[in-house]
Length: 181
Image 1 (cartoon, rainbow, N blue to C red):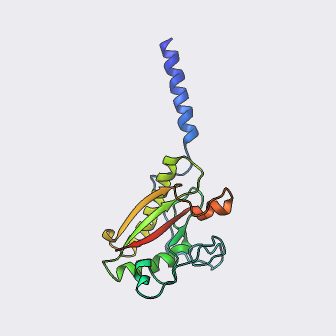
Image 2: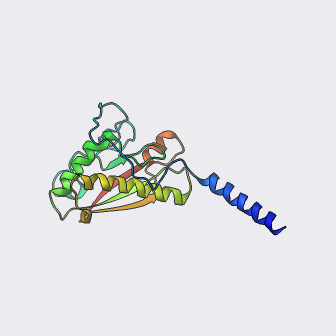
C-alpha cells in the first residue's frame, strides 16, 4: 500500500516538473556569430528607430550625454521569445557602448534584463538574468572591464509596454543599459 502511494506521488511530481519545463536551456551559453552583419532590414529594435517599439534612441548633448551613454545609440537590446541570444543586428549598438565604456574606466553600466509577462516569476527572473549576462558578456568580449558592469534581472516586474499583444511582448523582451557614476 505504501509503495503504491510513493509511486503515485513520484508520478505526480514528475508530471508537475514536466509541465513546468521549457525548451530553453538557461544553463547553456548562447553561441552567436559575431561576424554576422545585418542587412539593415528588420524591426529597427535597438537602432534608435521608433518603428517597432515607439522607444527612441538616446540623443543627448552637453554634460548629461556622458551619464546617458553614447550619443545617438539606443540603450535597449531586444530579444526573441524565450531567448537570451544577442541578435546580430544589435552588434553595432553593443560595439558603440563598449567604445563608450572603454573611453573612461570611471563609467559604469547596469544591464537590466527584462521579460514579457508569459511564464512564471522564477523562470522570468532567470531568463532576464541570462539576457543581462549575455549583453555583459558581449561587452566583455569587446574589452570592457567586469568592474564597469553589473547585470541584474527584473523579470516581468517592470514592463516597458502594458498589454497582451505580440507587439507589447516584443517591447518587454529586452535588456536596458543604465549608466551610473
